[in-house]
Length: 146
Length: 146
DNA sequence: TATTGTTATACTCTATAACTATA
DNA sequence: TATAGTTATAGAGTATAACAATA
Image 1 (spheres, each protein chain N blue to C red):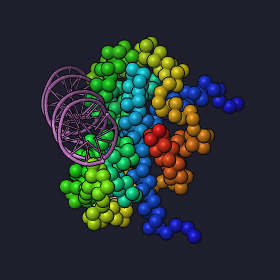
Image 2 (image 1 turned 180 degrees about the horizontal axis):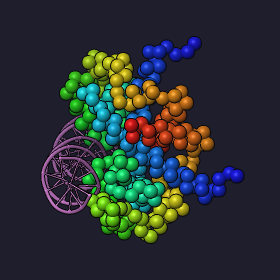
Image 3 (image 1 turned 90 degrees about the vertical axis):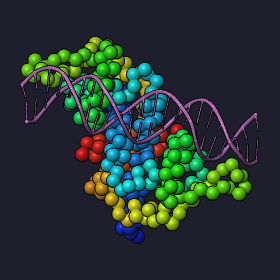
Image 4 (image 1 turned 180 degrees about the vertical axis):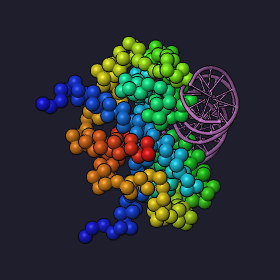
């Protein structure tokens, strides 16, 4: 029995395509289904700031967007009063991003409500599926950053 | 021991965000790293046609894009001679998409070369990681189509 | 009157390049 | 001369709405 290696190669090619397609569909739907006022990529930056990322450059690297894209996201977050910008005293070229009280409150709300499209779908999954997603998330993150 | 349920909820919220971020980064990078001339979403449609999807509407549903978006993709594929359009004899409103010889050759080439950004990364993974990705792909596809 | 597909239009997101200021 | 950040511009991709042809 066993699978011929040519077939294994095909399987990998199909997996690569199915995975790409799934990622793309998920990306689009998360954005589209987002209803909470604050778009997912902004929430994501709030999370990253809380985890310790502190400058626009650091955040851009973490989220894998260009610095101009991060500037725009930070403009929105600042306009909504969720983060604040301040100059770094040691090197005034760089900008320090900090969470405001409102920003922290928004994070708390997201954690408490769990009312996002993705979380609702995760809640319905079996333990095995969830475990696979956890592992896959780690793998995909590493691939994405590589 | 065990994890308090509030913490479990948080874990799910963070997983949801990390997963969304990973999907988004993968989507962007696959597109950006694509070098083979034929972009990934076109390859994906070729695969789908070969698997039996036969009309623009069916293909749009499978790839989760609007029918206008699929029309554009099919225009490109037809211009490159990889698929052909023909009218359905039974209902001439609908269009049948078929692979051309060149389209089939392109698919064969993709399978044979395995030279895409994603496949290259998959090849370096452990069996456990791959298995997690297989399972995650299924789960994400189902969530995406739901 | 409903359905398949296409065309027209507008919008969102993203990156690259140019610019400002600090070092 | 190099770096952090912002602003300006342009390109890719997407969807909704309007339209044409057929049922």
